Length: 146
Image (cartoon, rainbow, N blue to C red; front, side, top):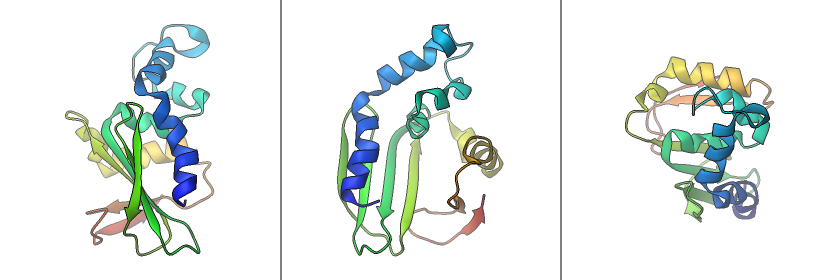
């Protein structure tokens, strides 16, 4: 994505705020109370799968470089209604999503847990999804195609 696409595709999500999303999530299917507040099976019905990252992360960064563009951009938000977009460094085209997890959400650092989540909820995505072991900004580490 380029600068404008980040704003168009992710900015609207961030502006809506966490509270509204969590209210819908807590309401559950057909307006009934959900069994548990983090019922991830409900996320798809609202069309905001990306936004579910704010359930476990205090900040989300998206670093993107569109194919054919020389510039890369960093979108970041805490999910409370505002976001920033600024120039970034990215050697190759593609998108990197970085979640700064909240305290107590360490289970999402486990590669087998991440693989399960991606395969369960993103198996329909036609583009390759790579799980990278190591520093997402500094390179190094192994990549696992999911």
